[in-house]
Length: 242
Image (cartoon, rainbow, N blue to C red; front, side, top):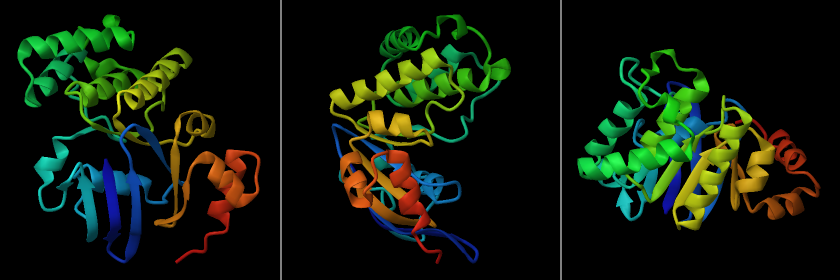
């Protein structure tokens, strides 16, 4: 479980995240939504430890990520907004390298790597260097890298961005599987169809603040809308600037 309380982060005079609080539960998919510049990616970067918050608390399975960053990060698997892959390594080398860094034996990492390559139809990419990959192919490698150590909590920033139809279906199926396994999934997406199909709860951020939180049905009831996209636009447009 991931619990965020009073999270704040400023860059000079600009406040990117302002007193953000929410909880992402085990066995559920939580969506983090907002327009560009709303503070979603900054919030995710603080949760997985890339940025240090100016104020607030981040709790990952009982670990205070600010006070004990390594304790919390061991419980996380992260697909960031930028893949950060090494261009000269192959897909398999990336996955096995990061898998071994996380602790499982080499034999276990190889077994898991093979299973993931099959699950996401990546066998043809396994021995190729990622330097020439498309955006979607890089995303697949980064996604498996995030999951190879079987984390309890999974953070996904735009996980289907750049993927073709079949790969998108595979990733959505994977997210559902993670939920069924009792994991905590927190992801950001601009695709309302995807959010509606996958999310148990939605947190909407605008101008660095949480403007609404609830199930898709609760957000529809709150706004009086019949469509989740219309509800999202209504909530974001009515939120005043700071």
